[in-house]
Length: 123
Image: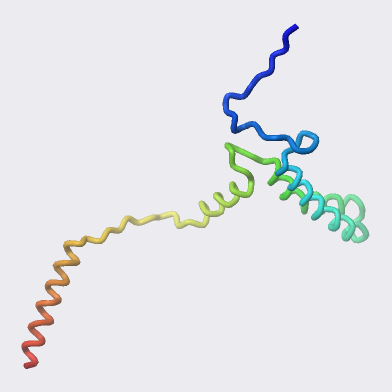
């Protein structure tokens, strides 16, 4: 019996697995989520109860975990958020403005003529 293994055509999609099938990026992001979530859980457990503390812990750890997992079209979550922020903060109307260099030169020549006339008038 022959076993066949499918090989992806794009070799850039192959990522080296680090621990238990996760990449280094995913392990680091999970670690950051854990480092943020566990203290939040223990600080809010007495005030909110167990289920409330778990909810708050998940809400605090979710952004870090999503940064490790989410990837669309080769772009990770933090870059996607950056691109979206840039898109929505840009002005909607962009005006096309040009500087006519010939008009600037003619204005400068006219200015020099008027300046020369005023200088001659003062004498």
